[in-house]
Amino acid sequence: MKSFPKLHLWLLIPFALTLIGFSGYWTGFSEAPLRWHLHGISATAWYLILIIQPWLYHNRPIQIHRKVGMLGIILAGFVTASAIGVIQGNLTQPDQSPLYAVRYSLSLLDFIFITGFLGSVIAAIWNAKNIQVHARWMISTVFWVLSPATTRLSFIPLGMIYQPKEFSDFPFSWVEVLSWNQVLVFFVVLVLMVLDYRKEKKIYLAYALVAIVQLSCIWIVLALKDAPWLISLFNHLFEL
Image (cartoon, rainbow, N blue to C red; front, side, top):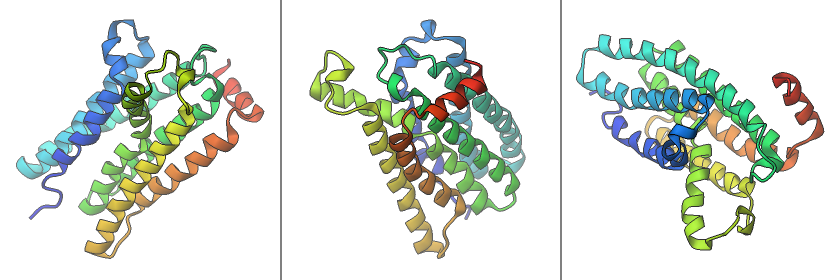
């Protein structure tokens, strides 16, 4: 029996969380800038392929899975390239934005996340003949980019509870909510690692790398904030 027979169903969960988390993009679709469209549409298409691929692997000839995988590689490139444009746009947040005070450190996190995403795609391609390793590298792409979506999603129930007139009325900051979500992603990945170890006595690098970086990013955003050297670095890179 082939591995991961229900993976496509499990992948629907983070896909739904991401769609809801970024619902503001879809509801304001006509007003969104081009860089958001390039990233939002390519990322959605990538997610759909990620969901479809396990189903194709189990239910269709392997040649179809490989052909769709080639399309996925192209989309992954679009997702990465468009993310750079989004990062640049985020650096020009208006001063009334809740992200303004930490826009540089959050942009550094976004850069780390999209680098991890692309690295996992490349590692998955490199290990295409090892299904167990290949699949976990592909699954890990979800967790690299999940916390930005779940952080936004968290503010939906929090908004219902606190009903703030302004974002500043929340008793916590964006960074604090992001940190909670980083911990959440870490624990989900940790569960996957424990399940693998119980079944195979093995820890996969794809998951371990995500787990380590997710916790490290909490320190990065809390300790660095918008350090002068970080501001200078990003201003130089994007010629701001």
